[in-house]
Image (cartoon, rainbow, N blue to C red; front, side, top):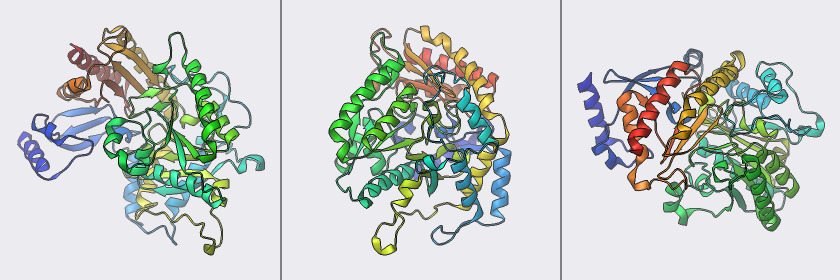
Length: 496
Protein backbone atom coordinates (compact mmCIF):
# COMPACT_ATOMS: atom_id res chain seq x y z
CA UNK A 1 0.00 0.00 0.00
CA UNK A 2 2.76 2.56 0.75
CA UNK A 3 4.28 1.90 -2.67
CA UNK A 4 0.87 2.42 -4.33
CA UNK A 5 0.47 5.71 -2.46
CA UNK A 6 3.89 6.92 -3.58
CA UNK A 7 3.19 5.84 -7.17
CA UNK A 8 -0.12 7.74 -7.25
CA UNK A 9 1.53 10.84 -5.81
CA UNK A 10 4.24 10.74 -8.47
CA UNK A 11 1.74 10.22 -11.29
CA UNK A 12 -0.37 13.08 -9.97
CA UNK A 13 2.51 15.53 -9.87
CA UNK A 14 3.36 14.65 -13.47
CA UNK A 15 -0.02 15.71 -14.88
CA UNK A 16 -2.39 17.42 -12.40
CA UNK A 17 -2.45 21.15 -11.58
CA UNK A 18 -4.13 21.50 -8.20
CA UNK A 19 -6.47 24.34 -7.11
CA UNK A 20 -5.39 27.12 -4.79
CA UNK A 21 -1.90 25.61 -4.65
CA UNK A 22 1.66 26.68 -5.38
CA UNK A 23 2.72 23.42 -6.99
CA UNK A 24 6.35 24.00 -6.05
CA UNK A 25 5.33 23.34 -2.44
CA UNK A 26 4.91 19.69 -3.30
CA UNK A 27 8.61 19.26 -3.83
CA UNK A 28 8.74 19.05 -0.02
CA UNK A 29 5.08 18.69 1.01
CA UNK A 30 3.83 15.15 0.39
CA UNK A 31 0.82 14.73 -1.88
CA UNK A 32 -1.75 12.58 -0.08
CA UNK A 33 -3.72 10.12 -2.26
CA UNK A 34 -7.10 9.21 -0.72
CA UNK A 35 -8.65 5.80 -1.37
CA UNK A 36 -12.02 6.09 0.36
CA UNK A 37 -13.98 8.05 2.93
CA UNK A 38 -16.54 7.32 5.62
CA UNK A 39 -18.25 9.67 8.07
CA UNK A 40 -15.77 12.27 9.28
CA UNK A 41 -12.73 10.34 8.06
CA UNK A 42 -10.62 10.14 4.90
CA UNK A 43 -8.65 6.93 4.33
CA UNK A 44 -5.37 7.10 2.45
CA UNK A 45 -3.75 4.50 0.23
CA UNK A 46 -0.98 4.48 2.82
CA UNK A 47 -3.32 2.74 5.27
CA UNK A 48 -3.70 5.79 7.50
CA UNK A 49 -6.88 7.74 8.16
CA UNK A 50 -7.36 11.48 8.55
CA UNK A 51 -10.11 13.40 10.37
CA UNK A 52 -11.66 15.80 7.85
CA UNK A 53 -11.84 18.84 10.15
CA UNK A 54 -12.64 21.20 7.25
CA UNK A 55 -15.35 19.08 5.55
CA UNK A 56 -13.34 18.97 2.32
CA UNK A 57 -13.57 22.70 1.65
CA UNK A 58 -16.81 23.00 3.66
CA UNK A 59 -18.88 20.80 1.36
CA UNK A 60 -19.24 17.53 3.24
CA UNK A 61 -22.10 18.60 5.44
CA UNK A 62 -23.34 15.35 6.96
CA UNK A 63 -20.21 13.23 6.64
CA UNK A 64 -18.69 11.35 3.74
CA UNK A 65 -20.84 8.79 1.94
CA UNK A 66 -23.96 9.38 4.00
CA UNK A 67 -26.09 6.27 3.33
CA UNK A 68 -29.25 8.16 2.40
CA UNK A 69 -27.39 10.27 -0.14
CA UNK A 70 -25.57 7.25 -1.56
CA UNK A 71 -28.86 5.35 -1.96
CA UNK A 72 -30.49 8.32 -3.67
CA UNK A 73 -27.61 8.62 -6.13
CA UNK A 74 -27.75 4.91 -7.01
CA UNK A 75 -31.50 5.07 -7.51
CA UNK A 76 -31.32 8.14 -9.73
CA UNK A 77 -28.61 6.58 -11.92
CA UNK A 78 -31.09 3.84 -12.79
CA UNK A 79 -33.64 6.42 -13.95
CA UNK A 80 -32.17 9.54 -15.55
CA UNK A 81 -28.59 10.76 -15.74
CA UNK A 82 -29.00 14.14 -17.43
CA UNK A 83 -31.23 16.20 -19.66
CA UNK A 84 -30.85 19.86 -20.53
CA UNK A 85 -33.10 22.11 -18.47
CA UNK A 86 -33.95 24.41 -21.40
CA UNK A 87 -37.32 23.25 -22.67
CA UNK A 88 -37.23 20.10 -20.51
CA UNK A 89 -37.73 19.38 -16.85
CA UNK A 90 -37.62 16.46 -14.42
CA UNK A 91 -38.89 15.55 -10.97
CA UNK A 92 -35.67 16.08 -8.97
CA UNK A 93 -35.26 19.67 -10.20
CA UNK A 94 -38.92 20.47 -9.50
CA UNK A 95 -38.98 18.82 -6.07
CA UNK A 96 -35.73 20.46 -5.01
CA UNK A 97 -36.94 23.91 -6.05
CA UNK A 98 -40.19 23.35 -4.16
CA UNK A 99 -38.31 22.27 -1.04
CA UNK A 100 -35.85 25.17 -1.18
CA UNK A 101 -38.69 27.67 -1.54
CA UNK A 102 -40.50 26.04 1.36
CA UNK A 103 -37.60 26.21 3.82
CA UNK A 104 -36.07 29.51 2.66
CA UNK A 105 -35.93 32.48 5.05
CA UNK A 106 -39.23 34.35 5.01
CA UNK A 107 -39.70 38.15 4.94
CA UNK A 108 -40.09 39.50 8.45
CA UNK A 109 -43.63 40.39 9.54
CA UNK A 110 -42.30 41.91 12.74
CA UNK A 111 -38.91 42.81 14.24
CA UNK A 112 -36.72 39.77 15.03
CA UNK A 113 -36.75 38.58 18.63
CA UNK A 114 -34.37 40.34 20.99
CA UNK A 115 -32.95 37.13 22.39
CA UNK A 116 -31.35 35.83 19.19
CA UNK A 117 -27.80 34.91 20.15
CA UNK A 118 -25.13 37.32 18.91
CA UNK A 119 -23.22 35.79 16.00
CA UNK A 120 -19.96 35.74 17.96
CA UNK A 121 -21.46 34.28 21.13
CA UNK A 122 -20.39 30.77 20.16
CA UNK A 123 -23.62 28.84 20.54
CA UNK A 124 -26.93 29.88 19.07
CA UNK A 125 -29.80 29.81 21.58
CA UNK A 126 -33.17 28.54 20.36
CA UNK A 127 -35.92 31.13 20.08
CA UNK A 128 -39.39 31.40 18.60
CA UNK A 129 -38.17 31.96 15.05
CA UNK A 130 -35.93 28.90 15.33
CA UNK A 131 -38.81 26.75 16.55
CA UNK A 132 -40.83 27.87 13.55
CA UNK A 133 -37.97 26.90 11.27
CA UNK A 134 -37.59 23.48 12.85
CA UNK A 135 -41.32 22.94 12.27
CA UNK A 136 -40.96 23.94 8.62
CA UNK A 137 -38.06 21.52 8.18
CA UNK A 138 -40.33 18.74 9.35
CA UNK A 139 -43.14 19.76 7.02
CA UNK A 140 -45.47 21.40 9.53
CA UNK A 141 -46.76 24.94 9.29
CA UNK A 142 -45.34 25.73 5.88
CA UNK A 143 -45.79 29.46 6.49
CA UNK A 144 -46.88 30.38 2.99
CA UNK A 145 -46.43 34.16 2.66
CA UNK A 146 -49.53 36.27 2.74
CA UNK A 147 -50.24 38.48 -0.26
CA UNK A 148 -48.62 41.41 1.49
CA UNK A 149 -45.31 39.56 1.70
CA UNK A 150 -45.48 37.42 -1.42
CA UNK A 151 -43.68 39.93 -3.62
CA UNK A 152 -40.70 39.82 -1.24
CA UNK A 153 -40.73 36.06 -0.62
CA UNK A 154 -38.04 33.85 -2.11
CA UNK A 155 -40.15 31.87 -4.54
CA UNK A 156 -38.09 31.22 -7.70
CA UNK A 157 -35.00 29.00 -8.07
CA UNK A 158 -32.30 29.31 -10.74
CA UNK A 159 -29.79 26.46 -10.81
CA UNK A 160 -26.06 26.71 -11.56
CA UNK A 161 -23.01 24.49 -11.12
CA UNK A 162 -21.03 25.84 -8.15
CA UNK A 163 -20.76 28.69 -5.69
CA UNK A 164 -18.94 31.15 -7.93
CA UNK A 165 -21.47 30.50 -10.69
CA UNK A 166 -24.31 31.23 -8.26
CA UNK A 167 -22.75 34.59 -7.44
CA UNK A 168 -22.41 35.37 -11.15
CA UNK A 169 -26.11 34.58 -11.60
CA UNK A 170 -27.15 36.82 -8.70
CA UNK A 171 -24.99 39.75 -9.85
CA UNK A 172 -26.28 39.50 -13.41
CA UNK A 173 -29.90 39.12 -12.32
CA UNK A 174 -29.69 42.17 -10.08
CA UNK A 175 -28.12 44.34 -12.78
CA UNK A 176 -30.52 43.01 -15.43
CA UNK A 177 -33.53 43.62 -13.19
CA UNK A 178 -32.74 47.33 -12.94
CA UNK A 179 -32.02 47.49 -16.68
CA UNK A 180 -35.37 45.88 -17.48
CA UNK A 181 -37.06 48.52 -15.32
CA UNK A 182 -35.31 51.32 -17.20
CA UNK A 183 -32.59 52.04 -14.60
CA UNK A 184 -29.56 51.29 -16.76
CA UNK A 185 -27.38 53.66 -14.74
CA UNK A 186 -27.34 51.13 -11.89
CA UNK A 187 -24.15 49.24 -12.68
CA UNK A 188 -22.27 48.96 -9.39
CA UNK A 189 -22.31 46.73 -6.34
CA UNK A 190 -21.52 47.33 -2.69
CA UNK A 191 -19.40 44.63 -1.06
CA UNK A 192 -17.80 44.33 2.35
CA UNK A 193 -14.11 44.61 3.06
CA UNK A 194 -12.65 41.21 3.81
CA UNK A 195 -15.42 39.41 1.94
CA UNK A 196 -14.93 36.50 -0.44
CA UNK A 197 -17.43 35.35 -3.07
CA UNK A 198 -15.51 33.20 -5.53
CA UNK A 199 -12.88 33.31 -8.23
CA UNK A 200 -14.73 33.73 -11.50
CA UNK A 201 -14.37 37.33 -12.67
CA UNK A 202 -17.71 38.66 -11.45
CA UNK A 203 -17.48 36.92 -8.08
CA UNK A 204 -13.84 37.97 -7.74
CA UNK A 205 -14.84 41.57 -8.46
CA UNK A 206 -16.89 41.70 -5.26
CA UNK A 207 -14.19 39.88 -3.28
CA UNK A 208 -11.80 41.81 -1.04
CA UNK A 209 -9.05 39.28 -0.32
CA UNK A 210 -5.83 40.58 -1.92
CA UNK A 211 -4.36 37.09 -2.22
CA UNK A 212 -7.02 36.25 -4.79
CA UNK A 213 -7.88 39.65 -6.22
CA UNK A 214 -4.66 41.62 -6.74
CA UNK A 215 -3.30 39.76 -9.78
CA UNK A 216 -6.54 40.04 -11.72
CA UNK A 217 -7.46 43.59 -10.69
CA UNK A 218 -7.14 45.00 -14.25
CA UNK A 219 -9.85 42.56 -15.41
CA UNK A 220 -12.35 43.27 -12.65
CA UNK A 221 -15.24 45.67 -12.24
CA UNK A 222 -14.81 48.05 -9.32
CA UNK A 223 -17.34 47.67 -6.53
CA UNK A 224 -17.85 50.11 -3.69
CA UNK A 225 -16.36 48.53 -0.58
CA UNK A 226 -18.11 49.20 2.72
CA UNK A 227 -16.28 48.51 6.00
CA UNK A 228 -17.02 45.06 7.39
CA UNK A 229 -18.79 44.74 10.76
CA UNK A 230 -16.08 42.19 11.67
CA UNK A 231 -16.12 41.99 15.47
CA UNK A 232 -12.36 41.38 15.53
CA UNK A 233 -11.97 45.00 14.38
CA UNK A 234 -14.09 46.42 17.20
CA UNK A 235 -12.67 49.47 18.90
CA UNK A 236 -11.56 49.24 22.56
CA UNK A 237 -14.59 48.79 24.79
CA UNK A 238 -16.88 48.25 21.81
CA UNK A 239 -19.10 45.16 21.65
CA UNK A 240 -19.79 43.23 18.47
CA UNK A 241 -23.25 44.84 18.36
CA UNK A 242 -21.71 48.30 18.81
CA UNK A 243 -19.33 47.58 15.96
CA UNK A 244 -22.26 46.50 13.78
CA UNK A 245 -24.13 49.74 14.51
CA UNK A 246 -21.08 51.84 13.67
CA UNK A 247 -20.57 50.02 10.40
CA UNK A 248 -24.27 50.41 9.52
CA UNK A 249 -23.91 54.16 10.02
CA UNK A 250 -20.97 54.15 7.61
CA UNK A 251 -22.94 52.08 5.10
CA UNK A 252 -25.83 54.55 5.34
CA UNK A 253 -23.49 57.40 4.47
CA UNK A 254 -22.17 55.41 1.53
CA UNK A 255 -25.67 54.64 0.20
CA UNK A 256 -26.70 58.26 0.57
CA UNK A 257 -23.97 59.08 -1.95
CA UNK A 258 -24.18 56.10 -4.27
CA UNK A 259 -27.60 54.38 -4.10
CA UNK A 260 -28.63 55.82 -7.46
CA UNK A 261 -25.87 53.80 -9.17
CA UNK A 262 -26.02 50.66 -7.01
CA UNK A 263 -27.71 47.40 -7.98
CA UNK A 264 -27.19 45.47 -4.75
CA UNK A 265 -25.25 44.98 -1.55
CA UNK A 266 -23.63 41.56 -1.24
CA UNK A 267 -22.34 39.89 1.93
CA UNK A 268 -21.65 36.59 3.65
CA UNK A 269 -24.10 36.57 6.59
CA UNK A 270 -22.47 36.16 10.03
CA UNK A 271 -19.13 34.69 8.88
CA UNK A 272 -16.69 35.94 6.24
CA UNK A 273 -15.17 32.55 5.61
CA UNK A 274 -12.22 32.65 3.20
CA UNK A 275 -11.36 36.12 4.49
CA UNK A 276 -10.23 34.55 7.77
CA UNK A 277 -13.42 33.27 9.41
CA UNK A 278 -14.22 36.79 10.60
CA UNK A 279 -17.57 37.01 12.39
CA UNK A 280 -20.11 39.76 13.00
CA UNK A 281 -23.17 40.39 15.10
CA UNK A 282 -26.54 39.29 13.70
CA UNK A 283 -27.97 42.77 14.23
CA UNK A 284 -25.96 43.90 11.21
CA UNK A 285 -28.17 41.74 9.00
CA UNK A 286 -31.33 43.35 10.39
CA UNK A 287 -29.96 46.83 9.85
CA UNK A 288 -28.65 46.01 6.41
CA UNK A 289 -32.04 44.74 5.26
CA UNK A 290 -33.63 47.97 6.49
CA UNK A 291 -31.04 50.10 4.65
CA UNK A 292 -31.50 48.16 1.41
CA UNK A 293 -35.25 48.71 1.68
CA UNK A 294 -34.84 52.40 2.47
CA UNK A 295 -32.49 53.06 -0.44
CA UNK A 296 -34.21 50.60 -2.81
CA UNK A 297 -31.24 48.36 -3.58
CA UNK A 298 -31.13 44.58 -3.62
CA UNK A 299 -29.60 42.45 -0.89
CA UNK A 300 -27.60 39.41 -2.03
CA UNK A 301 -26.90 36.89 0.73
CA UNK A 302 -24.01 34.55 -0.05
CA UNK A 303 -24.83 31.53 2.12
CA UNK A 304 -22.74 29.20 -0.01
CA UNK A 305 -20.51 28.29 2.95
CA UNK A 306 -22.70 29.23 5.91
CA UNK A 307 -26.05 27.74 4.88
CA UNK A 308 -27.73 24.49 5.96
CA UNK A 309 -27.02 24.62 9.67
CA UNK A 310 -23.39 25.74 9.83
CA UNK A 311 -24.13 28.80 11.96
CA UNK A 312 -26.63 27.16 14.34
CA UNK A 313 -29.75 27.90 12.32
CA UNK A 314 -30.69 26.44 8.95
CA UNK A 315 -29.78 29.71 7.24
CA UNK A 316 -27.61 32.44 8.74
CA UNK A 317 -30.08 35.12 7.62
CA UNK A 318 -32.59 33.79 10.15
CA UNK A 319 -30.51 35.11 13.03
CA UNK A 320 -31.11 38.63 11.75
CA UNK A 321 -34.79 37.93 11.09
CA UNK A 322 -34.44 38.77 7.39
CA UNK A 323 -34.90 37.40 3.89
CA UNK A 324 -32.63 38.68 1.10
CA UNK A 325 -33.61 39.45 -2.48
CA UNK A 326 -31.16 36.81 -3.69
CA UNK A 327 -30.02 33.79 -1.67
CA UNK A 328 -26.98 31.94 -3.07
CA UNK A 329 -26.54 28.30 -2.00
CA UNK A 330 -24.01 25.58 -2.83
CA UNK A 331 -21.29 23.52 -1.03
CA UNK A 332 -23.31 21.56 1.57
CA UNK A 333 -26.39 21.54 -0.67
CA UNK A 334 -25.53 18.09 -2.04
CA UNK A 335 -23.80 16.88 1.11
CA UNK A 336 -20.41 17.16 -0.58
CA UNK A 337 -21.14 14.65 -3.34
CA UNK A 338 -21.70 16.61 -6.57
CA UNK A 339 -21.39 20.20 -7.80
CA UNK A 340 -24.66 22.11 -7.69
CA UNK A 341 -25.75 25.59 -6.72
CA UNK A 342 -29.02 27.47 -6.53
CA UNK A 343 -30.01 31.12 -6.51
CA UNK A 344 -33.35 31.85 -4.89
CA UNK A 345 -35.05 35.13 -5.68
CA UNK A 346 -38.36 36.92 -5.34
CA UNK A 347 -41.52 37.17 -7.37
CA UNK A 348 -40.73 40.84 -7.91
CA UNK A 349 -37.44 40.00 -9.61
CA UNK A 350 -38.99 37.20 -11.68
CA UNK A 351 -41.77 39.46 -12.95
CA UNK A 352 -39.24 41.97 -14.28
CA UNK A 353 -38.05 39.34 -16.78
CA UNK A 354 -41.43 37.86 -17.69
CA UNK A 355 -42.50 39.26 -21.08
CA UNK A 356 -42.90 38.44 -24.75
CA UNK A 357 -39.60 37.27 -26.24
CA UNK A 358 -39.55 40.29 -28.53
CA UNK A 359 -39.28 42.57 -25.47
CA UNK A 360 -35.69 41.38 -24.99
CA UNK A 361 -36.06 40.90 -21.23
CA UNK A 362 -35.22 37.19 -20.94
CA UNK A 363 -32.33 36.08 -18.72
CA UNK A 364 -30.20 34.26 -21.28
CA UNK A 365 -27.79 32.57 -18.91
CA UNK A 366 -27.08 28.86 -18.83
CA UNK A 367 -24.76 26.05 -17.75
CA UNK A 368 -24.61 22.72 -19.58
CA UNK A 369 -25.35 20.77 -16.40
CA UNK A 370 -27.94 23.18 -14.99
CA UNK A 371 -30.27 21.27 -12.66
CA UNK A 372 -28.58 17.91 -13.24
CA UNK A 373 -30.98 15.20 -11.98
CA UNK A 374 -28.33 13.24 -10.07
CA UNK A 375 -27.09 16.35 -8.25
CA UNK A 376 -30.66 17.40 -7.47
CA UNK A 377 -31.39 13.97 -5.97
CA UNK A 378 -28.30 14.27 -3.78
CA UNK A 379 -29.55 17.66 -2.60
CA UNK A 380 -33.02 16.30 -1.89
CA UNK A 381 -31.49 13.49 0.18
CA UNK A 382 -29.40 16.02 2.11
CA UNK A 383 -32.45 18.15 2.87
CA UNK A 384 -34.43 15.05 3.88
CA UNK A 385 -31.80 14.25 6.51
CA UNK A 386 -31.99 17.81 7.83
CA UNK A 387 -35.78 17.48 7.88
CA UNK A 388 -36.12 14.03 9.42
CA UNK A 389 -33.27 13.95 11.92
CA UNK A 390 -32.48 16.34 14.82
CA UNK A 391 -29.33 17.61 13.10
CA UNK A 392 -29.57 21.20 14.30
CA UNK A 393 -30.22 20.11 17.88
CA UNK A 394 -27.19 17.80 17.81
CA UNK A 395 -25.11 20.59 16.31
CA UNK A 396 -25.89 22.86 19.24
CA UNK A 397 -24.55 20.28 21.67
CA UNK A 398 -21.49 19.63 19.49
CA UNK A 399 -20.84 23.36 19.14
CA UNK A 400 -21.01 23.77 22.91
CA UNK A 401 -18.50 20.96 23.33
CA UNK A 402 -16.19 22.51 20.74
CA UNK A 403 -16.40 25.87 22.51
CA UNK A 404 -15.44 24.33 25.85
CA UNK A 405 -12.44 22.55 24.34
CA UNK A 406 -11.21 25.71 22.61
CA UNK A 407 -11.69 27.98 25.63
CA UNK A 408 -8.21 27.41 27.15
CA UNK A 409 -6.60 28.77 23.98
CA UNK A 410 -7.89 32.25 24.83
CA UNK A 411 -4.97 32.57 27.26
CA UNK A 412 -2.29 31.40 24.85
CA UNK A 413 0.46 34.03 24.41
CA UNK A 414 0.20 33.85 20.61
CA UNK A 415 -3.59 33.62 20.26
CA UNK A 416 -5.23 36.98 19.61
CA UNK A 417 -8.80 35.70 19.32
CA UNK A 418 -10.92 32.58 19.67
CA UNK A 419 -14.30 32.98 17.97
CA UNK A 420 -17.19 30.74 17.06
CA UNK A 421 -20.53 30.79 15.29
CA UNK A 422 -22.35 27.49 15.56
CA UNK A 423 -20.24 24.75 13.97
CA UNK A 424 -17.63 27.20 12.68
CA UNK A 425 -14.75 28.10 15.00
CA UNK A 426 -11.47 29.92 14.47
CA UNK A 427 -8.27 30.67 16.36
CA UNK A 428 -6.36 33.78 15.29
CA UNK A 429 -2.60 33.46 15.77
CA UNK A 430 -0.54 36.61 16.37
CA UNK A 431 3.09 37.46 16.89
CA UNK A 432 2.04 39.86 19.65
CA UNK A 433 -1.12 39.03 21.57
CA UNK A 434 -1.47 42.51 23.08
CA UNK A 435 -1.20 44.48 19.83
CA UNK A 436 -2.56 41.69 17.64
CA UNK A 437 0.41 42.17 15.31
CA UNK A 438 0.30 39.18 12.96
CA UNK A 439 3.07 36.78 12.15
CA UNK A 440 4.57 37.74 8.76
CA UNK A 441 2.80 35.88 5.96
CA UNK A 442 6.16 34.79 4.57
CA UNK A 443 6.76 32.67 7.70
CA UNK A 444 3.76 30.48 6.80
CA UNK A 445 2.96 29.55 10.39
CA UNK A 446 -0.35 28.04 9.30
CA UNK A 447 1.48 25.59 7.03
CA UNK A 448 3.25 24.23 10.10
CA UNK A 449 -0.14 23.51 11.68
CA UNK A 450 -1.29 21.79 8.49
CA UNK A 451 1.78 19.54 8.30
CA UNK A 452 1.54 18.61 11.96
CA UNK A 453 -2.13 17.78 11.50
CA UNK A 454 -1.37 15.34 8.69
CA UNK A 455 1.34 13.70 10.77
CA UNK A 456 -1.20 13.17 13.56
CA UNK A 457 -4.09 12.17 11.29
CA UNK A 458 -6.19 15.33 11.00
CA UNK A 459 -6.85 17.63 8.04
CA UNK A 460 -6.41 21.18 9.33
CA UNK A 461 -5.96 23.70 6.50
CA UNK A 462 -5.45 27.15 8.09
CA UNK A 463 -6.23 30.42 6.33
CA UNK A 464 -2.91 32.18 6.81
CA UNK A 465 -2.60 32.74 10.55
CA UNK A 466 -6.14 31.54 11.26
CA UNK A 467 -6.60 27.94 12.36
CA UNK A 468 -10.25 27.08 11.83
CA UNK A 469 -12.65 24.18 12.30
CA UNK A 470 -15.64 23.36 10.11
CA UNK A 471 -16.17 19.63 10.61
CA UNK A 472 -18.95 17.43 9.23
CA UNK A 473 -22.07 17.35 11.37
CA UNK A 474 -21.51 13.63 12.08
CA UNK A 475 -18.41 14.36 14.17
CA UNK A 476 -18.51 12.99 17.72
CA UNK A 477 -17.40 14.67 20.96
CA UNK A 478 -14.40 12.31 21.12
CA UNK A 479 -13.43 13.27 17.57
CA UNK A 480 -13.75 16.94 18.49
CA UNK A 481 -11.40 16.30 21.42
CA UNK A 482 -8.86 14.75 19.05
CA UNK A 483 -9.25 17.53 16.48
CA UNK A 484 -8.66 20.29 19.04
CA UNK A 485 -5.80 18.39 20.70
CA UNK A 486 -3.98 18.13 17.37
CA UNK A 487 -4.65 21.80 16.62
CA UNK A 488 -3.27 22.90 19.99
CA UNK A 489 -0.13 20.87 19.40
CA UNK A 490 0.20 22.44 15.95
CA UNK A 491 -0.30 25.93 17.33
CA UNK A 492 2.42 25.33 19.93
CA UNK A 493 4.84 24.22 17.20
CA UNK A 494 3.85 27.02 14.81
CA UNK A 495 4.15 29.81 17.38
CA UNK A 496 7.39 28.63 18.99
